[in-house]
Image (cartoon, rainbow, N blue to C red; front, side, top):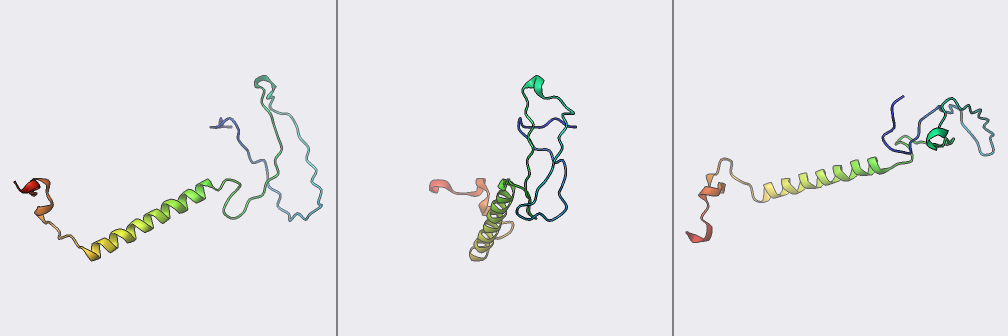
Length: 104
């Protein structure tokens, strides 16, 4: 058992493999195999649902979609800039020491 990174965490105990309908009763038996009273810890039973895209926290999925959309936008923008004003390969005029700042 690894130590959790944050002070509050959830640990998956099991899965309910059958379909549940409204009004179904679930019976759970709990045992205190690890004492948490010494450090004022608490244990709770949470019944949660997940979908094909994950659990309750949508941050990671939203972050992936945002970064992916930003990368796609920048790729399209740079492609359009390249087609409108292409830059010649190996052109020494773009080097800093070949520029003529201020007409000198």
